[in-house]
Length: 72
Image 1 (tube, rainbow, N blue to C red):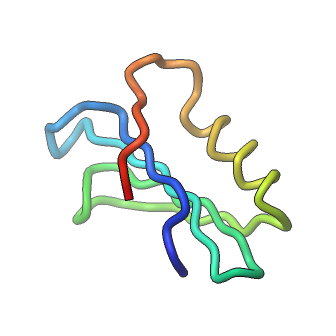
Image 2 (spheres, helix red, strand yellow; image 1 turned 180 degrees about the vertical axis):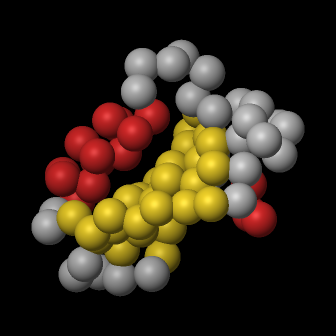
Image 3 (cartoon, rainbow, N blue to C red; image 1 turned 135 degrees about the horizontal axis):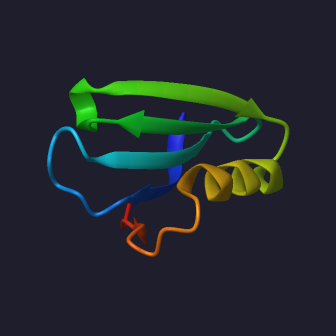
């Protein structure tokens, strides 16, 4: 799976960091929500399309304006 989009909440602390990724292999799509950085916990949800993955990623990020996209 390759990362198509990546956002983080701007909190650099290990306990406060949150990341959301949209990934694809060209056919399947998934969204990963990660808490606590690389060594933290994560949840992956399969999605039927890119549009569905974007909707889910938006929902998991919520309305907090501190979220920012990261370059790939």
